Length: 443
Ligand SMILES: Cc1ncc(COP(=O)(O)O)c(C=O)c1O
Image 1 (cartoon, rainbow, N blue to C red):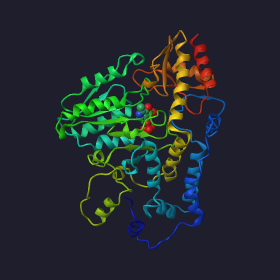
Image 2 (image 1 turned 45 degrees about the vertical axis):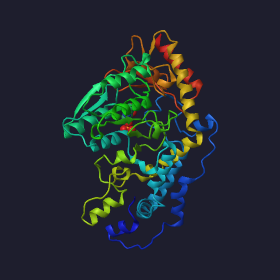
Image 3 (image 1 turned 180 degrees about the vertical axis):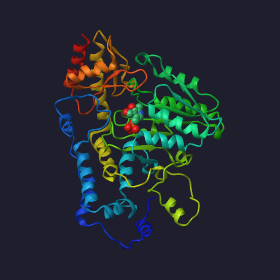
Image 4 (image 1 turned 90 degrees about the vertical axis):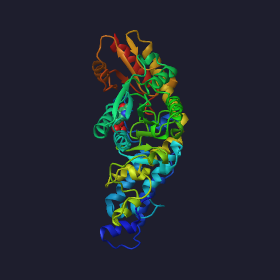
């Protein structure tokens, strides 16, 4: 539930009555629902991006270039905010449920995720989402958080910072020794072996930015569910998934993936505005969390404060969405990116990502001095391809590709690899050019 206008006005001592956003600003604010272009062919989709043509962009997964439809939505909201910040924020955030722009964003996101709008918390990125979940879970001394050795620094740090406060212990397990030869069955059995009697949380990453491997999240969730079914209610584990490199790249109904908490930035594969993300969870899981950051999106919290009484009811997603005034033009334009993905088609996007990256992996594997780290199997990979060139450090490979105007990246992990990642901004021909450049520098 959102703050009503009356409540907000009362809080600010203003008396505007039923002030309405001027028609011109209303049009700006409503531009989010402007008709989406057909986006039928890949060249038309590629033209959505304003990427410099001097380079071949193979690190699109790092942080999004805003597509045209998203730029336009941001611009509309920005115009309205610059013209009249007070009335625009009032209208968009506090006036009524029906006009609330965060609600509209949640509706667009839920249509893509397959869940319900009120299951979604809006965050600035994956990092904040993970921190909200790990700090919000009621962990205590004697509980264990089980995580893997493959996760991103922000995932491990969210756990460290939380468990240093609450006294729970942390254990890390390795899910495979060689990503290229991993199998879903072997990964799931490592998970089963790793879970201990005190494990209360299992943290995993859907698509690893360290190796490009995609975990069989559904099968892991089923294993967790089976172990949980033999446990007392209070000893059951929750599954936390860092899904940032799966959402927008893989054709999956995220609400059915099996995660209890799904955390993702939407400013990578989803092409939503930079500085946006989500946490998705069902109502019973939100109810387990203690919010960490004050919310602007939950009327009950505000009413409890004004009436000087305890907050009623269970924690809900809106109560966990960090409040404070934000760069609203970015947050409110998130929905446009989700609608763009729906318009192109989730399955079509995933197929394109698989085709381009499959082509990249085939090409890299054909080079004698190159070792591909990411599995060739499309069901165990997504859009990130990690590799090493014999006799070269990953940083050197990336630098030499950059000299050839190809933007690759180096994975920021203790064991790092060079990475090429193809997305909707790339063509099969560009993939071939990138592979040819790797061949040339491999010697
Ligand atoms: C696996 C993984 N998780 C989390 C992050 C951090 O993402 P965000 O910028 O959305 O916090 C990254 C960064 O690229 C990542 O690769």
